Length: 332
Ligand code: AMP
Ligand code: MG
Image (cartoon, rainbow, N blue to C red):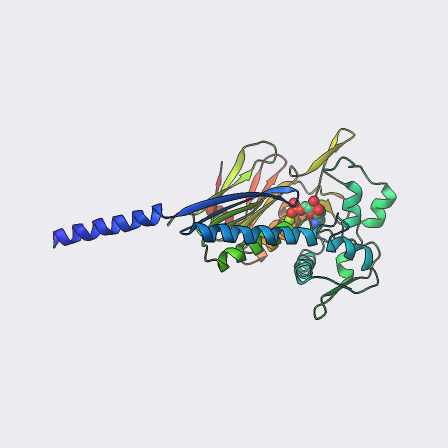
């Protein structure tokens, strides 16, 4: 009996070793959304990893091409120049991004606002033409709650603006939406283990190993080291930080997340807001929103959303964790 058990154990060990060594890894780096995206996929079959990565690459580029407002060839550019007073038909993808964005505009009472294109363009933070807009411009294009005046027709997939100040900017949601679509593609190819890093928008698919979650670092906003490590499994983890994009104007530093009510970079005291949530598009909207809301209101919002967690870091490096984040976060 003892001998049979020994043989069985040996076979099981061999089988599990075969399982480990047959796992293939592939990594691909893309430059889209003005940032570096890294896909790391794991599975038993190299061909299906490559096929899934090809499909993700194609989809992500398509999403960028319809959701980026800068290029006159892009759908969003066309929408922005023609939707005031007119129903403009757009693709299902762009419609879905706008629809999800507007949902979070409402949920966050306008802290997240996808209609700030005019004022975002005028500040041009992170570009060589960055400047402080005239006070009259800021007055005109802040606090107008444009998101309340975007009319969607779900049947015809049209969008109409009812305020001439509206220009959509989807920079706060598009990467998260793209990462969510990438995750869906992995599911279609039965890839159950992957790490997708879309420039600060991370999707951890599955677990690192049996019994071990992925560890995702949260950057120290004022250094190159990590401030915290979060154990993640089948979730998105998205950070909005004042260090991600900024410009120095007349010796002062201005970051890229605007408070829709002031038309200026948010001064809520948050240096970075990280949201952990199952849906990556939602986590992207929420991280931008809670950055603007500040740690107190932002945390209250996160605690009210089932399954959402957050890590806030303020300008002095103080870290605040939501109740669920305490269980999965190590402060470094
Ligand atoms: P994120 O890095 O996801 O926080 O998104 C920041 C980007 O979203 C900016 O570069 C702008 O394009 C856009 N944005 C800035 N402020 C807001 C805001 N309050 N609500 C929605 N989008 C914003
Ligand atoms: Mg965002």
